[in-house]
Amino acid sequence: MFHSDVKRLNNRHKRDVADRSKNWGKKKFTPNAFRRTEAEPVPEETSQPWNHVKNDILDGEHEERNAERFDMNSAQAKEFRRQREQNHRRNIIETSRNTKTKWESFDDDNNAAETSESKTNPGKKNYKETMTSKTKRSIMENPQNMDFTQRNYLRRKLTKAVMTQKNDSLNAAIQDMKRNACKVHKDQIQPLNKNNKFRNN
Image (cartoon, rainbow, N blue to C red; front, side, top):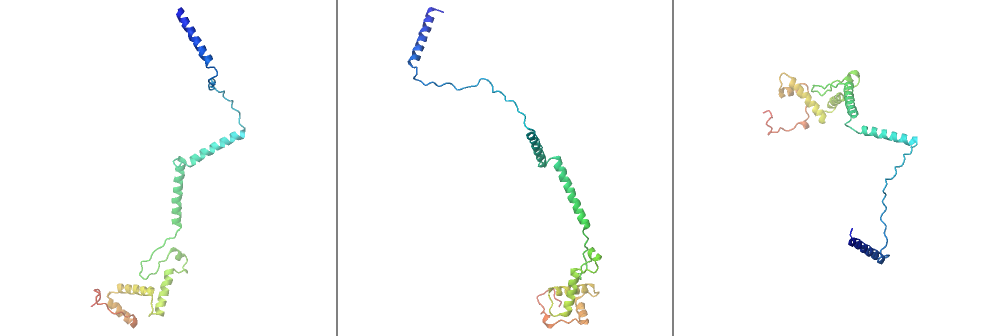
């Protein structure tokens, strides 16, 4: 190191000391923020009481069970659905076996066929049978004033009689009614409709 370099360093040091002494106390001192250079010590785990440990175990098991319970794609849920469908089909088959078979009638006289229930209880009459007997009775009691049910019953009987006769014409049915003294009241005779193309000429 040369003599000139040493002199230059001394002059710089003197200038720094002079500047510091001149500006001393003018700028407020602000210390640097504290920074920990070492890692924080790890606290030692303290042992929990047994009741806390037991509660944690029970809560974990409960959450696992609930998760499996609401999982509809799990094997247990699929097995449960399959078993439920089998039970439902079995119940339907059992109820259909226990219900009694009802047979419908093909007769035109509107008599209901005997069901298995009426076979077991022969004294019990069907609703349609009682209505038919009431209709017969009311026609015989008051033939002038017939309601729709009575007229319908009489129409069905006439149709059956006409279709079963060998001479199946309407004139033969009218002649048969006249022979059996079936009279029509004058108020019930309706005028013929000339525009009816199905009317017998």
